[in-house]
Length: 228
Image (cartoon, rainbow, N blue to C red; front, top):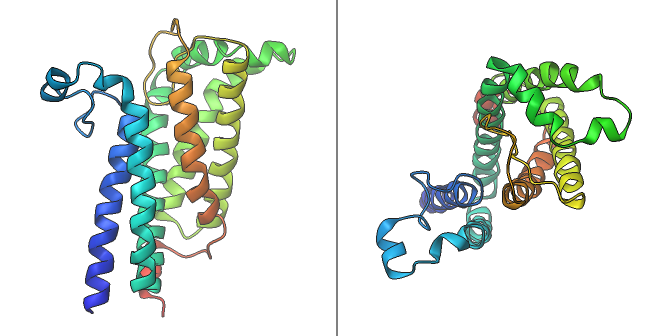
């Protein structure tokens, strides 16, 4: 019991650090970030420039903390990590889909800024993609949380991450200043590549727990904790 409590405490700390890390990388100026705090900027005016470094460091430390948690109580750690990953990644995809479903026209504008489909002579696909893709994000994200089909959901989300990585790499390789359009529908008139880089780093991190979930057995979140 003592080992389980310590393992749980370590995983809670790791979860908080991952949340801070993802926020620093993708959501600067959110309540979870530190590099934009006024008191820190007063001491170190350039602190905000290091949000990605802080985010990556937090995720690396969180990964390190998971190791002793796993060694202390292997079965508990695996169940907890599966639960956290399913809720976290599934919830993120649901959240990301809402704005796109509500405003498919603006999402189509953001998709067009990547200039990917025209390069493949598939201009007509752009609007269809903007209508369909957010639905995939919503339903597969929901399925990962509330259905037992974790492998299928994770496999689908894994390939979504692959598509994001390809699109962002394409944009960076072609020197396109873009807005990601991942979680909010801003005007597609960015003048630098900072957002593309942060989005790419985030996706390269999150694709790995998604791939791990794709190897898990199908069962609901309730059965994750009930199985022997």
